[in-house]
Structures are given as structure tokens and as C-alpha cells.
Image (cartoon, rainbow, N blue to C red; front, side):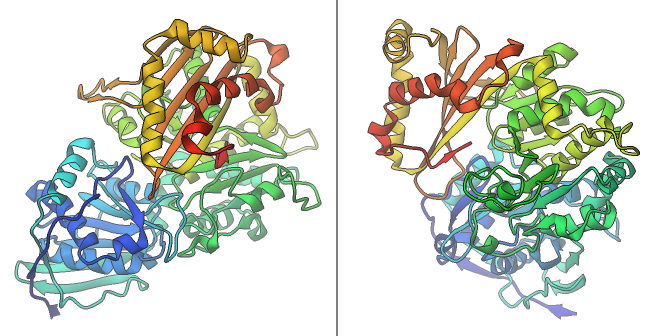
Length: 585
């Protein structure tokens, strides 16, 4: 057994190590600066209680993006020096964010060990590569992201750090080979276990869904399927689940080989970046792939916690997706057969879920953006299904959003709706059929999101300041609106969203600026914390339509007056210098 010594390295604070809603994300060149990663990792260890470090079991893995291998070796050496007993690593450093959550919650080591937390190496849907983004976040023993009480401590620690311990002489661990490597240190034995990335997650999915009914759907000659991992970590699960377990054709998988630069693409599952899938599904304005599109298509982001759901020539908004899953969960998914405890959405997400909750008599919660808010509700047994407009959907099976779970949920709903038709030549109930039936039952929430990325941070703050100032005089706001589009309804109320957590009473302020109209329409403005440089302004525009004769309009046409109002009211072009957004969803 190889032994190691612990040395203490002197360091000094590095500015800007404040974790956002999803950890610390910066360019790779920033993380490669001397002591940059080490400072943040030690600040995290110092923020945890001693029993979560000394003698503990930690998971260290991520989406396999560029710099992951080097980062894992550094974290393993620091874990050893801090007295951690064992580190679990997914083979080739690959574990999806939802799989990490599942492993913390479900996995038991051969010696009976359970993980108390995890360092997840991901920048989610941001690009990867030597000149692109890297990220790190810490998840707690419930499998969810560290709460603000911990991330605030981490940040404070980064501002005062003077030294960190490290086992410099610990040999490099081979993370490509499954097995346990044992070492001996000053505080005793230290193990690194490399294990199969998919086993635990697949086992969990099989306990939630009826794989046999999904398999029957996928084997039907009437049903065709396509899944795009965008060269992210979802590729480590796609073949195993969709091909081996569910019998899908190998050819139905697109970009399912994980790559450290995501194949040079942007691993964000939306209509802008999932170009190949969008074209195959018949939704591209420029590419015509020829042939009939598949009945169902889906994509994942870099760390496989986000999802995009498509039907043949049909896009399902994430806001509609979570509402439809909630409306159909009890009948279609065995895990929910005894009923839903409650549902929740992030504040910017459309109110489609609210209407389902009201109709079905379910507890409903509106929370700030950030999955940890859902996690609190789930830990308290108050929420079963939740989602965000930013392509995140999930349930209380783990404490992260889960892209593959969402795909399996949709396949379950399709299998349930088609259980009488798969044997014969009856017409398939399609994705579009399910969505349109949902609108007919609950009304339609026309919805769009405009993202302005890498905006000058000072200008972005000035824009938000103007919107807050305008809220002090709604008559003036309504006068401006009538001058832009007289047919747009008046603003009934406006505020900065503030959330009081019903579980622990914690208060989250300044969570987005809202303008709420008399007809149920909404304008929401937020500064996003998920980019690595500059600021991202997100503008959300929503209009509710109950009239069945008006639910079939083109979304952009229906929303055009409200979009115009939002851009002019906020002076978007004046502050950003942009005549159009980076991304429209």
C-alpha cells in the first residue's frame, strides 16, 4: 500500500470566488491560476462540519468537460490531506448531476459506507474546452446543492484563506479503470473507488418507471424516437437506458459520445443550440433533412440535468412540459400512483402548473430560481414534481433536476395514452395531441424568454434599477404602455419577488422584477448567475388564454405587443446596445 505525507501550502485570498445558484463558474484559464481551485475546495471543506470531512465519503465527478481530469486529481489529494476516508469517482470522471444526487442518496459501498456530499465538476449548459468554461459546486448529504448558509460560508472563507493541506506525493489515480486504490496517510487509510457511471442511476430509473410499457411503445412500428446528448455526460447513460434497457435503435441516438469540448458545440438543449436534433424533428427554418421526422425527440445539456422535449414539428415549452407531467403523473408513472404531495415552479416559469394544481387540488409553491428551493420542499414531504422554464424538470426521487427522468416521464405518458393503440393500426396519440388536449383543458400560457448574454454588468444593473424605479408609479407605467400598444392591459401590480421559505423561514430577496397585468399576463426581468463572464439579462413574457378559439395562435404573434412593451419600457437596446437578444426561447 502506497503511503503519503501531508504538506501545508501558504496561499492568499483570490477575488471573485462567490458561488452562484449553481456553484462557481469561470473560464478554464481562471481555474488554472495558481491556487485558484485549491482555495475554493479548501474554503468548502472549512465551511462543512468536521464529521462531513474527517472519516467521510465524498463523491467527486462531473460532466467530463475540459480540465475535469486535472481537477479531480487535485481534489483527491486535498481530500486525503483533510482526513476524508474515501472518494468515489465515476469511471472516466463521468457522472451526471442527477446521478451524483442519486448516488449520495442511494449508493452503499461494499463496506457499508454512504456518501455525505459531493464536488460536482460542471458548468452545466455552458461550452467546454481550453478557452471555455469550467465549474465546481458542492452538494450536501440530501443530494441537493449546498444551501445559501453554506455557500455564504464558502465565500467568506475564500476572502480569509491563508493555507491549505494537500497530499502532493499521492500518486495520480487511474480514473479510467473500475476498482479501489488504497493509500496510507498520517490519519490512516484513504481509498479512491472508481465505479460504473450508470449502474446506480439506471437501477433508480427502473424503480420509478414501467420500463416494459415504454419498451412496448419504442418497439411499435408507429413510434419513432431520437435522443441528442449534445456530446455531454448524458451519453454515458443514453445507450444503456434507451438501447440496452428499452430496445431503441442505435441510430436513434445523436451525439451520445461524451467529449471534453462537447464536440465544439454549446451543450444547451434549446431550439438555438440543438441544431441537429431540431433539423431532424422538422423544426429547422434552414435545414431540411428530408424524410419524415421522428414522433418524439429529446435533448440534454452538458451535465444531463436539463431537457428539451419535441414532437414531430412541434416544440414543447418547459413550462408546459412540467404542467403536463404533473397532470398525467399519477396515471402514467408507477412512482406517483398513490398521488402527488404537491407541485412547484420557479417564479419566471409560466403559470401553466398553477392551473393544473388548482384544478387537481394540489399544494402549489412558487420559488426563486435555484433547485435548492425545491429541495427544501421535497425534504419536508411537500412537493413531488417541479420545474423551471430553463429546461429543468424533476421530482422528489433526487434533489436535482433530471433530464433523462423528464424524457422517461414523457415516454411513460405517451405509452399510457397509447396503450390501447400500439397493437393495431390505430392512430398514435402524439406529443402535439397531448399538448393541445392539455391547452383545451387548462388554457394556454403563451410564453417566451429573451436572453441577452455577456452584457456589461454595470449597464445591466442600471437597467434593473430603472425597472425598480418605474414600479413606484404604476399610473406612469400604464401611460407609457398605452403609448406603445393601447390594446395591452394595464399593470395591476409590480414588485421585486421575495420568497419566504415555508420550511425553514429563510428569506430570499431581489429574486426578479415582476410586472403583473390585469389579464394575467406577466413581464419578468432577471439577472442570471449562470454565465462565467459579464451579466445575462433574462426577460420572460407570458400571456394566458382561456378562450379555446384563440389557443392555436403562433406564440411570437400572440406575444408581439407585450414583447414590444417590455423592450421599450426597459430601454433594452439603449442599455445593452443590442437590437436583438442572443437567444429567444
